[in-house]
Image (cartoon, rainbow, N blue to C red; front, side):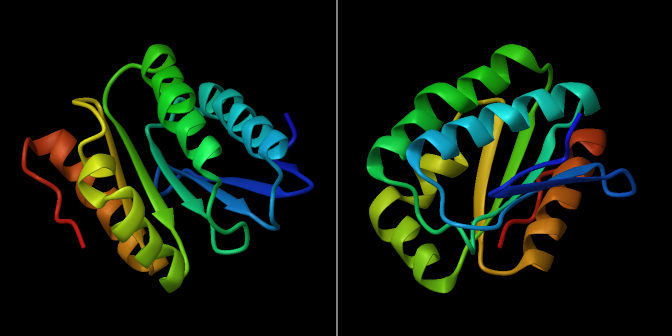
Length: 146
C-alpha cells in the first residue's frame, strides 16, 4: 500500500508504535475526508492505536470538517479497532489557541471512554504523551498530559 497522498505523508515508527500522519499542504474537504479514510486503511494494516497528526502545514479544518471528524472518523476508528485509541494533534501556536478557545480541549480530551485526543504545539510533547499513554495502558496509571 502507498504511504502517502499528494497532500498527506504517512510513516509508521515501529520503535514507537506510532502512526505519523503529516499533512504537507492545505486540503479541501474532499481531500481531508479521503486522507482520513486512507489513514484508516493504513491503521488496519498496522493494527495501531497511537497516532500523531501533524497539522502545521494543513491548518485548521472547517467547522463542517471538524464535525465530520467527530461524528464519522473517530466513531469508525472505535468500530473497527479494539482497545483504546490515542490521537496527538501537532498544530501551530495560533491553531492551538483556536482549538483551545473555539473547540474546547475538554471536549477532545474526553471524546469517549476509548478515545483520547490531545492537541500539542511541540512534537516532542506529543510523542511523550503517546508514550505515557502506552505506559498507562500497560500499567494502569494515568498518562501525563501537557
